[in-house]
Image (cartoon, rainbow, N blue to C red; front, side, top):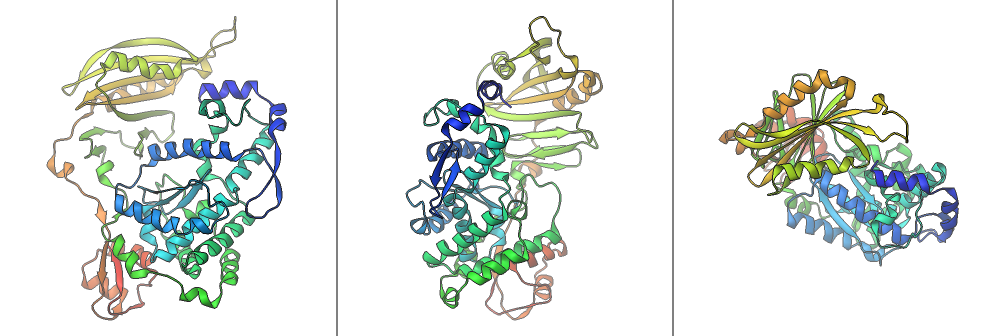
Length: 489
């Protein structure tokens, strides 16, 4: 937790919490409920969370697709209970199948979920469900409950436009994305999703096949996800699906589905991890977009997001974190700036100085970092960490490696961490530099046949068959219809 939040939390208590607690009218139900987070603060929290999401996961770099999702979403906004709220819609560049809402009207859908959907109406019902969470203020209510349980972490002026003054609330940060809604919240968001999509002219009946498609993903679940999937954040049950089916009326099937139009738009969508942003092959991590490579030890695991690369041993007693930032600053100055994040701690310098790493200018500083002890008290060695910071300059970008271990573990990991940094070099292999992501291909079926036969005939690798079956909601043994659009890769 950043030190500014710790100080605020330590000095503000339950009395302040009670001071701003208020019973407000829920915009959906019209009933009074206890709410500690006014709309102004909800919007500020949304802005902060949005910035963190964009940095952590990245936005999908396709303006046309983003505009399309925005258009589908805004078609439903006038029919919501908070239609004057300033909504923001975005597509995240991750293969994980999910959609979620941050406070204040920030709604996200992943490219992984778009790849799973089979019509504009399916996507509309998902977005309408998220609009339901926002309109019923589910996340704000959940956080209000958490604050009550914690005894309150508040600030003096809840209406201030200065985000720093509401920093304690922003401790929630990325956790906003992973809040567990209650069953009643999910039922209500489903009912609002049906209502908003229907009012906008979309077939709400398409919520059901989408839910079934997501359920089938459990059979094909793999490891290494960096973001909870739809089942994690919106647990599906047979009762939920049956409740949605009860909400449907005969006229729902006559409303817009827009299957072929949607599938045509998905042609060329990136599927799976995008190797342009970095990929692990053997014991080396390659990043074509930034043209670098470095090695990792056998048995260590790697997590890659647009914001950072994290490398950890199996026991997680050490960590190496790589970040990159465009900068022309001199390296000693840049290194000192990195140390500012430890300004509230006691820092002991072990070494500092310039070096060359594979022809690139670099600087290294190694430190012991401890919480500042109370006056007259010794440093707590058990809470002291070793922090190794190395900055490398390449092509107008500074790459910073942060190595972390407990002080007592530093002798065991120092050489290994440094070897990883020293392996950093320019990527010059054209085969690596030119690697491209796998993309969806939307094809029209020329004659009726079982899906498996079609895939065999068109030389689609067998390892993709199960996933393609899920993505199209068609069993491998089920027959395709001549003229049908099909997603393959």
